Image (cartoon, rainbow, N blue to C red):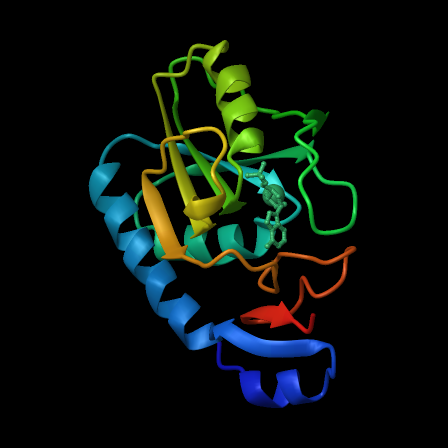
Length: 184
Ligand code: IMP
Ligand code: MG
């Protein structure tokens, strides 16, 4: 898919700048898909997508993975509007699949404080999967409160609130094809 990032950006006066272009995302997602495909040969992993933010990433990632795999969805909330994580995590929607003895790959949009992922890993491990790994498009590692393992990382980003490619500000901007930063 090709997008005119610049054109989309200039039409919205609230977007300050593009942090990662749709082209850069595209290239990186292909690389991640290739890496995952190599690591999971003959394993049929289950990709656990964390809604809503990671749905765009999953849609591209699944098409860049050449080995058989399943997808399933989970919704957790740790976030109640605004731009700061509350640390309160609640499972809003659980998986359909039984992950016991399965190779689980969590697909996240962003790891910030790590609180959400830390809680999620605890929950999933009680179900005795064969393995659990984490793939996140974005990593704001300087903000980490809980040390969580990240196995596949798209981009390390600075401590800025980002939007686009699935990530929202008050449910808006998920549809942007790039990762951007809003005006202060
Ligand atoms: P954590 O628990 O602090 O790691 O936060 C993880 C969740 O917070 C992510 O899954 C996002 O939904 C949200 N989040 C963190 N930083 C951002 C951001 O810069 N933009 C949009 N959402 C964010
Ligand atoms: Mg999220």
